Image (cartoon, rainbow, N blue to C red):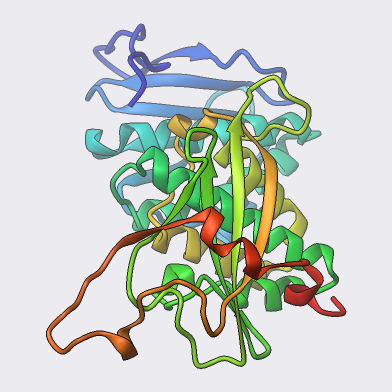
Length: 321
């Protein structure tokens, strides 16, 4: 969790709540707040009566109380209250991204619609709360999402592309589509000579074609096109469009251990190199079918110089896509 949060300088009131307005320029006022019980709040101020709209689209989220409260002078407040302090960093991420989404709302009715839709999306992440990803896991997930975007670039439908992403479901390879399997790996700028294979199953497949796809990621925050993990996730969510595809994508992110935390706003990566390898006879690998009985749970490194003869064009992976 970041060293400071929006609620740190808001005192706990004796009654009702204390607030501080969110700095972003939204069409409706938004506030960070604390109530008399010390709970962290996020408040969206609405003008008019939106009770019917709220009842029709209300959503419940484990660990977060969502309520529409009537105020004086024709105002209502949509109040999000954190129930468990252990989820404070996740709640902050929800509130910050909600505030950003509300920059595009034009009035109170649209602000409420945006808010409830946003909370519904976040329900998946809150229910799948997990530990923070390591920097290696962040890079690995980033690379897999880059490959997912490449599938969509080649005119695969959104839902087909997302359904081909099987790594989060503990498949031996990260992607399987048609009769092709692809294992995706990321390399940092410091990893110049080898790639880590984390099991004896990753480079063995029942599919006709198996490929290794390597992305070298450079942490260059100011470079053109640089994106954080949060940014590339948001870009894919916006691009998927179809509700079923977005829901499936979010569920797989949760299975991967991801939640849109502020921690993942950095580092920001650019893909500085991409290489593809066709895996077949002679490719240096350890596979389950060839291991002595009793040997299990292998992890090993492959020197890139030794697999140079197996490098292929990306068209071999994507075919006519």
